[in-house]
Length: 205
Image 1 (cartoon, rainbow, N blue to C red):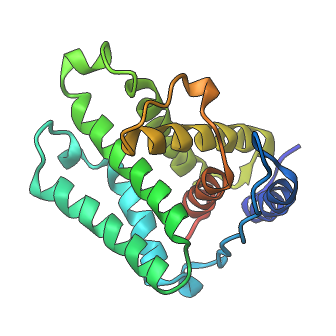
Image 2: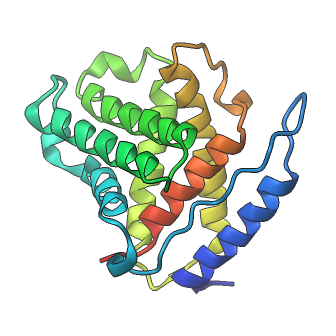
């Protein structure tokens, strides 16, 4: 059964609210996080949310495809970080969720840059989680152009995105996250993934 984009956004919000109020991780339960609300049109979305969304969409810009840091890549990362800082300062985003989104973005940029070097594809353990993250972001952007959405497909994508972000946040922090399948997904990863799904899947144009 398929639904409209807006129906899906409502569906996933309700499902995640229920999930966050009941889901536990080992060894103790964590406190549910408040869900970050999203308006239904660009006219009511703050400039900082729009700036954040624009940065993720610019990951496909050919100017990013360079192993060396360029003026474009550095500016892109700074614009993304600036939008996150502003959202946290305005009370629209929690600092820990902002940190996880920021880590995911930096890892996505690193993947796009490093895939220009052939040896990168076969060596580091971070290759697969980074590649999966970039692929899912691309799929979300493509789906945002559709008139209807399959909730089951996006639900699977969101669940995988949670694990991508949890793994990459551990890696970004200098820890050894282990196998992707064993990455511990907590409330922060769930909320960070939900925000990206809503921000990229909704049509704010």
